Length: 162
Image (cartoon, rainbow, N blue to C red):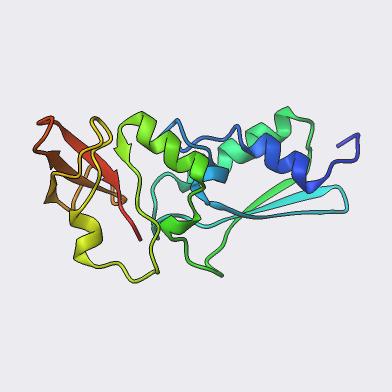
């Protein structure tokens, strides 16, 4: 690292790192990047996975290293941290819009006590109707559920509220 950088610059660079399963949302907007520390020319990035055992974590860690290296950061450490659990409230408004525009219903903000109502009543990202039903809480990944809209007759996924 030849020039002095700050945390804001690193966070700006990390906005380039996208979720490998949902490539329209950055790890910043997903709320997976939980801390950046710059000490003695070393950048340390803490990440909290959306799910314990998330199979994409190794890819995400490598993408963080690759992006920072591309921007001239030579000494990078990426840690998986469980100091604070991830929850879907950590998704930024920009991230929620990206999910919606991608065709995934974003999770509603909640009080961290998720009940079945929050899973069943989802706005369709295709037509905006709330005339939807939960088909199965088990989607293609652990963080998604499958729904059907009775208004536009489309099936869609929701990023689960956790």
